[in-house]
Image (cartoon, rainbow, N blue to C red; front, side, top):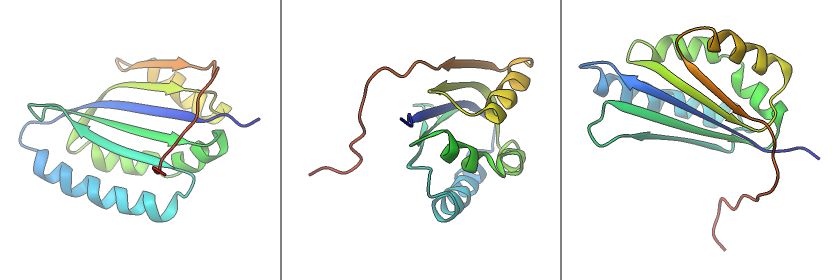
Length: 128
């Protein structure tokens, strides 16, 4: 059985970069929507004082997450003009390539949490 994966990333917004970041994230969102059909959820939320942003991604399985991660380094380089990573969370079992990427990140100052034991759940993305 393929298991869903949720990936959550937390970032700090750089001083004076919020407007540019909003424009950049709209561009990225359009590209992900067009090119990454296995990314079934991509949502971004700002905190109340607009100093932190959280992105929530959901994938039906590890292969869809792998596809999403293709080009992630380029997207991140562009985003890091406006934001800096604070922490990452993965819920589910990604493939080895993503795990290796997270191991490299966890060796830095960025916290990485992985909860791999999926036990129960469902998704209902549309009402009705």
